[in-house]
Image (cartoon, rainbow, N blue to C red; front, top):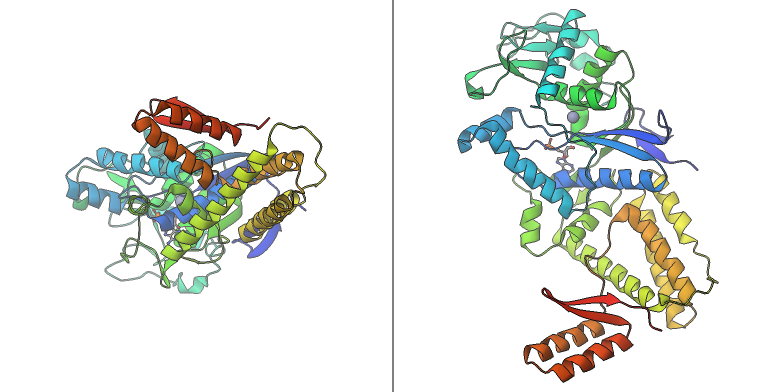
Length: 467
Ligand code: AMP
Ligand code: ZN
């Protein structure tokens, strides 16, 4: 069965067929770099990482673009209150974001375009000119340029909205709206005092781009007019993604995106985690409390992406113990695997089941279920001495293939507790210069299949096949 995804556009599960396989063109709306991203934001990025890794495990070549929104109301407001120029201010949060991606083991995108790069500002202006040329964009009395929604009848399809509510006939005489219709959105925002020294010259005067056109410009510039997959959180569907479709398709005349994938929110006590609600944790908040990036990754990834996920510390503790079970299993298999080279009598069925679960709209709970079944079953066989070293090696290979999508491997080789005790004892012996005891413990470790080396950073241990 081919990979299937739930497409927000059609509200159905569809077979995945990219335009030019094995290439998959994927665009994700990245962070607005006005502060540290919170782990709700990272739920979206971790889900996208699983998506990319699974497609790669299935042989696709993913070209992923993730933009950085480095100019908008919030970035300008916060940079001004910090007294730093916009680029210097956003640089800090871009760097922090890249650090956080590494902590969470998220594969870097092929491109991280930032909205303020001259190349993209030019492209945004070019697209707006094109829209204006076709009567789709207009400059209003306030100097800003708007998208004329009445010229894009498909607007609202992605969000399944009743457009009559958005498209009142005639002009609205509301102080707040100088645009023709209440739903018309800004493509170019005329400069005002709150913008300080932020602004670019354009055919419509000094100003700055609207958020939506930033994504249309970066996506089409780097990936072309047609994209296979576009992702984001569900809060991006309307108006942001709706606007991206309207702008891009009006400019290119082509269908912008084949598959729209949106992840549900990370919640805290029934409410969306967000900066504005104040119920958020940044990744740094959690790592400062001793949670590792791997544990947070597990907690964020382990619930299917279309289901809301409630953030709790019990959830993180659950992630910690699940990972400990995996580590212990891998370490037991590693020891058993040894160096013997006999064929395996136990074919490993879970591998296909695991991949097939992920093929099914990234059914991660199904996939993890297969992983833990494999763990339980192989422990049982090992307890009964029914698993050969070749079986263990086959299982380790299976684990490695699961882990291509999961990225759950331990930071360092997983050391069982009895081995750790020997290491601790050896450390203490060396501390008191008891070299004989230190050597004895090294031999005991070697007999148990672990080789210890003394380095400047301390003891380094590697699993060694027992002969
Ligand atoms: P922002 O920086 O607000 O533009 O958001 C960046 C990404 O995080 C977008 O894809 C949002 O949809 C997503 N996002 C924001 N809050 C949450 C949340 N609580 N749960 C999941 N995704 C979120
Ligand atoms: Zn976007």
